[in-house]
Length: 81
Image (cartoon, rainbow, N blue to C red; front, side):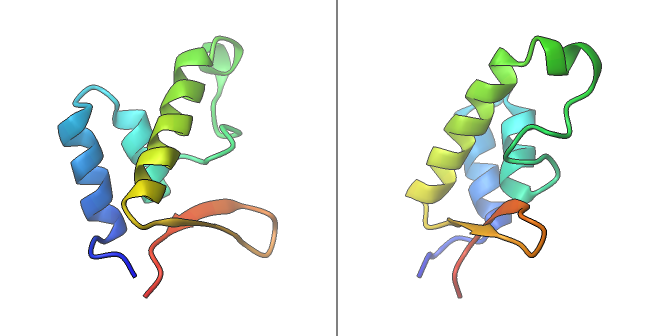
């Protein structure tokens, strides 16, 4: 059981990495773990977005979050209660 909520983990991530807003969005669920929500040039040149997704996922898991798969295969980060 984690002592942090998803929003608190995202805030901690932003404190550690102030310019990584996309990564914080991955933690809170605003942006997808798979990167399928990227559009335009971000989709074509998405290397930095990929790095942020991976780092955010590792950060969240290290702080007690787990990756769950929803009914349609959508992966999200959740904190077990």
